[in-house]
Structures are given as C-alpha cells and as structure tokens.
Amino acid sequence: MINELVYELVQIPGPTGFEGRVASRLKELLESHVDELYIDKIGNLIARKKGTEGKRALALVAHTDQVSMVVQKVDEFVWFDRLGWIDFNNLPGTPVLILGAERDIPGVVCASSTVGRREMSSLWIDVGDRQESVSVGDPIVYDHPPRWLDDNETILASQSIDDRVGCAVLVEVARRLKKPPRHDIYFVGAVQEEIGCFGVRHFLRQVTPDWFIALDTGFAQDAVPDIQRTVPMRTGLGVRRLAFAQPTVPYPATVNFASPRVNQLLIDAAKKLDVPFHVDVSTGIWSDHNIAYEVNPEIESTFMFVAARRYSHSPIEVADLSNAARAVDVLYQAITDMDSWDE
Image 1 (cartoon, rainbow, N blue to C red):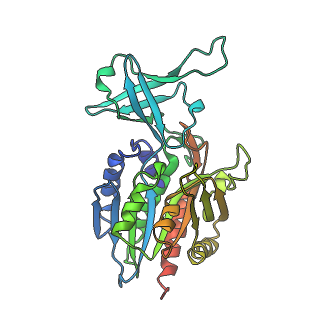
Image 2: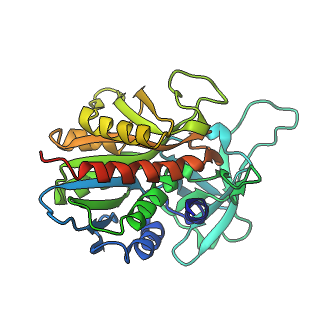
C-alpha cells in the first residue's frame, strides 16, 4: 500500500543538494516498471515508460529534496543556517541528523535556557563529543521518527511529507500502468526544489514533454484558517490554476498559469471516480510547475496537490495519506483518458 511506502520514504534523508539516497531507493522501486531509467549529473531520477506511439510525452514530477540546514562553523558546538523556508522558532529542542562524510551524526538544536527568560537567543546544535566528524558544508535534516495519528494508519506525522508523498505517488502510478499507454510517460524525481527548482530546470534542458504535472503537497487550512491554506487536510486533492511569487527586488517574479486542458483532464478524472477535488490559486509561493512554465510556456502544465499537509516545513508535518491513494487513482484515470488526445 502507498501508506507503507510513504512511511518508508520519509525516513530516508534527502536534504537539498544531497538527494542521492532517495533517488537510489526510487530507482530500485521503479526499475521493473519502466523501460529506461537513469540518474543525471545533477541528481534527478528520470524514468521513462514507452508509449505505443511515443510521439508525445507526459512528465510526472515530484521533488526528492526536503527542507534542510547546513553546517557553517564547528567548535564545541555546530553552528548552522537553513536551506529553504524554515521558521527558526520551530527548531529549539529538535533532534537532527548531520550527514557527515564518514557517517551520520545525531544532534539536537539548542538555545539559551528559557528559565526566567522569554526571548529566544541564537541557535546551535549539540553533538556531544563528535565534533571531529562534522565539517563545514555538511547537510542537516530533522530526525524525528514518523508516527501514525489514527488507528487505521492513514494520518501520518513526520518530517519530509513534502514531498515524499509525491515520490510515492510516482511509484504507485508506474506500478499501476501494466500495459503501455499511448503516450510516453516520464517519472521524474527532481532535486533542489526547495531552493529554486534547479533540478526541474535541468530536466527540461534534456527532455521537452508535451504535458507536465508537478505532484506535490499543498497547505492544509484546518489548524490556522488562512486564505493561502485553502484545502482541508482530509480532502486535500486538487489542482492549482495560478501561482505567483515576488522575491525581493531585483529578482524577478515567478508565475505559472496552469493549462486549462490538463486541469480539466484531472478534474474530470476525479469526477468519474467520485473523488473530492479542489481548485486553488496561490501567491507568495513557487513550485516545480512555476519553473516549467518559465522554461517553456508551450508545455501544457499544471500543479496537482496529492495531499494537503499541516505545519508545512516544520520538524513534524501531518497529512492524510488516503489522499495519496486517491491521487494515484485520479492520475491513472487521467492517463487513460489522455490516450484519446490527438493534439
């Protein structure tokens, strides 16, 4: 079941720029279900299932990296900074794992004692007496064990739900496609999404698919109602019509306008299966879909959220994995329906 696969994948460290362990496992999971499979020089996993015609292609893309941190200085303690969108207020007391050159080093994020004080001082990581095994530039990830929050083992609390759920969906869709579809299907585990989507940029320099669907998790609105968090966790499945992010000047904005045809394909597939499905827009955020639109707006593309997560980018995210199973059903139906497309 996909729940067990997600549970496995969230435990594999995949910090931005160091996603190799995740890519290697996905390669093992996909190799018997595709016709071509390789890891490119930047670290993307690229698999292709050949279509019966092969004139056109659909790319399904999930990112393999997770928000992470990096070692900046080592003395008695380990000093660090973040890579990706992390709130430092969530970090004190967090168990972490430093991926050293020789071995992984466990540690804990510490701060000045809060006894008698309310302000938070600077943060560091305590690794006990293993400082010699840590080097500047080593990546750091959260190190909480996953846990189920319901008796049916569908609601998962874990690090890196973003986007190991999407990675699991890739694998399950490939498994479901017993017969070759009409069009080629690319299954892509893209690197470095959390710091600028550099993996998908590189993929699109190698391959120009006709259609592109980014598979990622979205924001759940349940705990903190917010217009930016428009999808309830328990029915967290849908597509995004528009996303826009305006970084600090002088950097340009990123934007995407989803393909109406691809969005409608997914919406119709969900209706056929009686699966709850949402449509949203988002400002102040980017994804691999933004970059696909930027690199080549002639590719018909969209963003599909395969689950909605609470507490995004925190040490523990929460998602209902029944949505991931529904996402596999919807994508399989959409691929079947896409076989009839002639243009």
